[in-house]
Length: 176
View 1 (cartoon, rainbow, N blue to C red):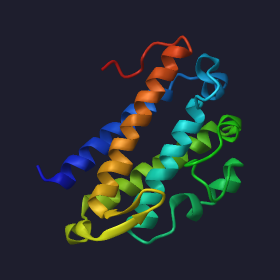
View 2: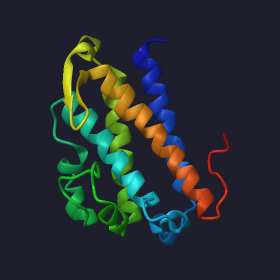
View 3: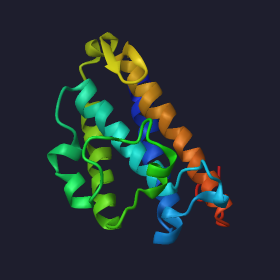
View 4: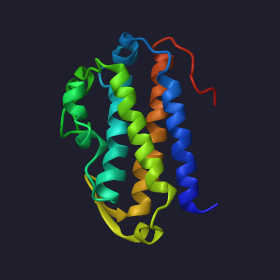
């Protein structure tokens, strides 16, 4: 198994686990601040932020293409911020983010996951050593952007989602 095959397999696994983690949530649970913790983010924010981040990394930073978010007009369709993805967002603003169209948001995520799968299905591996600017982290090789910002970052948010479920009185969704 190559490094790219490993990252692709783990991103596919991550996508499935994220979807499983939100499949049984009510709208109120999506938007509840876990345990009333003043600085915690909602599940809605966490998943929106992660999907937007993967979209930006894979589409814009690695391929120089418009994001699924921009191409699909998802900001207008979902009534969410057009340019930001949540990085550095003030806590109050992050907690105020609301997903009203859960089916539309699920469609956006499916399109992001599919765009990542398509990119990794037949990549030009020679480009993975090229430096890419990932704000606010700085310059890094393209393969690191995939491994750190998409895969590792995504699994961190999956852990937060599982903890949030526990703090909301729900059982774990992934059973690891």
